[in-house]
Image (cartoon, rainbow, N blue to C red; front, side, top):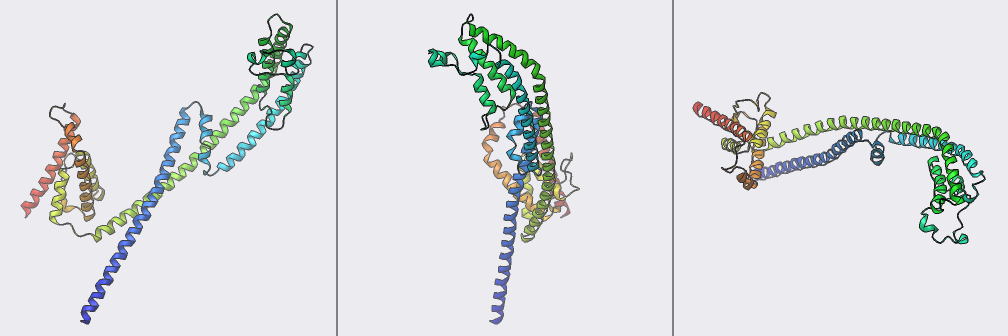
Amino acid sequence: MEEELVTGVGDVGIEKMEENKADDIGHQVDDLVTKVEKLEQRVNEIEQFYLTSSKMQSSTSQKSSFVKDKDKGKHIPGFKKHQQETARREAAAAKRMQDIMRQFGSVLRQITQHKWAWPFMQPVDVEGLGLRDYYEVIDRPMDFSTIKNQMEAKDGTEYKHVRDICSDVRLVFQNAMKYNDDKSDVHAMAKTLLEKFEEKWLQFLPRVTEEEKRREEEEAEAQLSMQRTQEAAHAKMARDLSNELYETDMQLEELREIVVQKCRKMSNEDKRNIGIALTQLCPEDLSKALDIVARHNPSFQSTAAEIDLDINAQSETTLWRLKYFAKDALHQQANNDATCEVSNKADSPVNPIQTIVSKRKTQICNALAKTAKKRNQKS
């Protein structure tokens, strides 16, 4: 009685240990699944980066592409420093533009101090002059007092570029010429002053174009610098990711071996069924099955002209993998039978590739049969 009790307790203990081992393997699998999901996200991120980089290089609008991807690079090392440098560069460029606009003020004074400039110094008194159709003809009224106020503004509405001031000066005279008849004094005065302004602007323009060219070069250099920073960071991410993928693969391999050790040994019947299942696979799945064999058997040539596959010579790990792979593949083939039947109708034209694949499949089936025949002769 005591011996039976001890034996019973021992069996329970062994059972409990086996359950704990199974739970431990289950937890390891869960951890690996979570890890793989994170690795997939990082792989997608790296792929997306290089895809975007390729598009940017082939696109003529690199600036707009770069601006769109600014937020995506916030986690890239060095991005904060790049932002600070960008802010400093833009502040310096804005200061230089302010200086140019102050210099442009001298051109503006020459125009406004002309004896014919007085009609354009203040907004048009539409009501006082009874110009009822003025706003129907003129979409955007403009005058020199409005320009002056916007040049001196400090509330964010000020001009950011000297070309904006130039456009508004032209608008002053263009409005007058548009609303007033060609023969009127105001039209003639506006036309004369516009011609004088264009002469002054052409003299001033080289300063503007020089600054614009400088700003473009600085922005291009900054974009290239940021691109290099991102490439270096993603290259490091790719290296780290490769190492992690290798470690994960090793962990999976260890788990597979543990699981196989826990499984029962393959019987001759199991091996025979695997051989039969392999002959029923489609050419694509058959190639994958041979790759599984080659993975654990370096001497096996899965792409050789003639294949001699001995099921009995395969390891337990390979056999279990082949079994479940063939099971899943045949299940998938069963679901696609209708499609396969339509594509394999007798009256369909002969596909040379399909003929080669069928020949390949026949060779592999013959190899399996040949191996089985040898085994029977030995018996």
